[in-house]
View 1 (cartoon, rainbow, N blue to C red):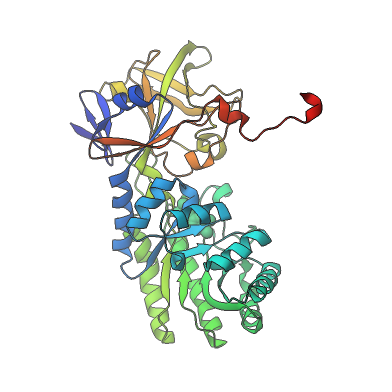
View 2 (view 1 turned 60 degrees about the vertical axis):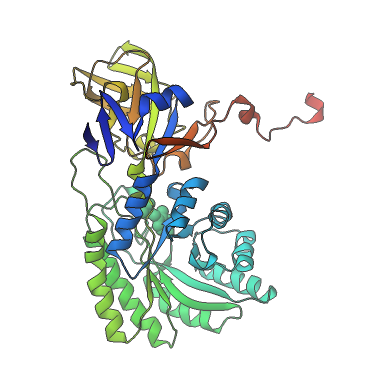
Length: 426
Ligand SMILES: *Cc1c(COP(=O)(O)O)cnc(C)c1O
């Protein structure tokens, strides 16, 4: 037995996750199959909590919104960052307390704001327009909405442009220069209690200096907002901490993230004589490396490249297609065998971009082999679709040698879903 990457092990040439043989999982549940190691979710969450002992950790539900995973995190005391009524609904159902939920979003519907008010969760307000809508909704409901403003701190997170969210050109947040005015405006509005401040600068951040820069800018704003006589109960710094997708890649840890934020946060709040709760919103770090996508080889072809055609497509894991991201590939039934050939692993979808892994040195592959795509836990299943008439696959949770289905595979009946024919087409 040896460790291949983080919690993943190899025994008798087979890849093992959570004490379970992945080739057995493929046999028992079929492929494609998402497999999540529950213990690893808890380890990652604990690492964050340990790095930020006085902070609240609001897991970003969009990274992986599966009910069982939210339940695991709820039991660990996690809060949640939700971006839609759907995420809010599932987070509450999973047992995340409403006091530990922040409803985010740059374009919420009135219905969503209504639900946030009714259910009593905090709202991160993204515009003047939204502030006034929320004020009316809360006033009509006879309630007070606890709000933060999402600040655009204009910090480059040095990551993929599609996941940079805190640049001045981004669609998210209130421009820094308008922040003070909007707090004083909010403090006059009925149904509104401005009690927090929020930012989130991007995702898959591999250098901690942008976190420090964002903290500087946020604490400058905190000082000004407190100067208005507003009592800030929380400062939410978002997250975006990256993970090592490549084997052996050095990436910052939650402790490095803490070192980039905490000294400054503590020093500045102390100087102001305030003690707001610090909130972090990690998503990818908590679930990214916990999950693999198992896929079976349908067919081999030697053409421009040495193609391996598998049964999962970008409808199940879109990151390589959308962000050019790297996922380490392991032949799960030959996990200790030495590389012999260069392969390009492709899905069955009718698009040239349906490529999971380019030019990888792998053991000799044949039809029927099982390939594991690693680190598929964040923005994997949660971004899946039925594109190309492909039902979504099952999800399994493993722990200490046991496995349970946490989401059944869809079938072609689910492709019909809620579709209907107008009577004239019957
Ligand atoms: C997506 C998101 C997060 C989580 O980002 P990760 O890169 O997964 O850690 C946190 N906060 C907000 C507001 C987000 O939109």
